[in-house]
Length: 103
Image (cartoon, rainbow, N blue to C red; front, side):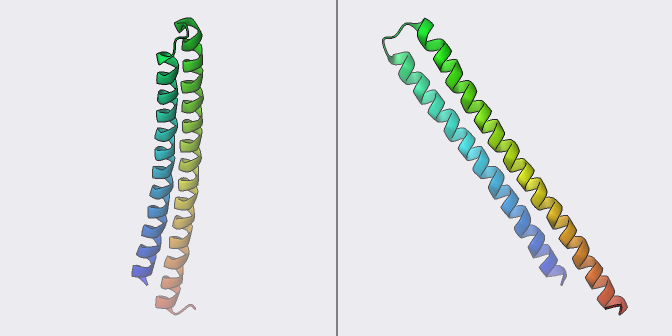
């Protein structure tokens, strides 16, 4: 029974870590795209005065989107962890009831 609980908690933790890693990966991809676009803009023959605001805007939007995705993933991971704690508590109560003969 304890093995099932441990396995369930580990599975939930693994899923939360996976969600966070996916968010980080996506955030990095967004930032990489923004850098690539910025390099393209910089290498073009437009004046720097025209390019700088566009570049800053792209990077700013990319960071904002990445931050939002990370926060959303952290929230989802926290919810998963919270649900795991509830399940562990329920399972422990069940085990105690079985051991004490209350079920």
